[in-house]
Image (spheres, rainbow, N blue to C red):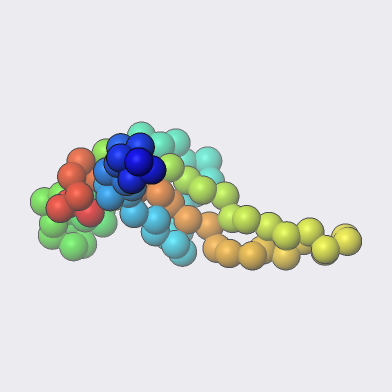
Length: 87
């Protein structure tokens, strides 16, 4: 029963890819980020015909230990492709 209920979520997850360590500007809006991935990285450098549909900038998770702030993991960009094959 749970598998059938999770099917739409699993299908959605198959389209996504988390890219860690990508140097993006925090002020860069999602439209510009999608355009930059498609033109510069995927089609330009990698010579691929796939397209990113949505790109979301994810802030790094931070841990607070008293007055110190420690970055637990680097910033990431969550990419969503049109098909799982593109991913």
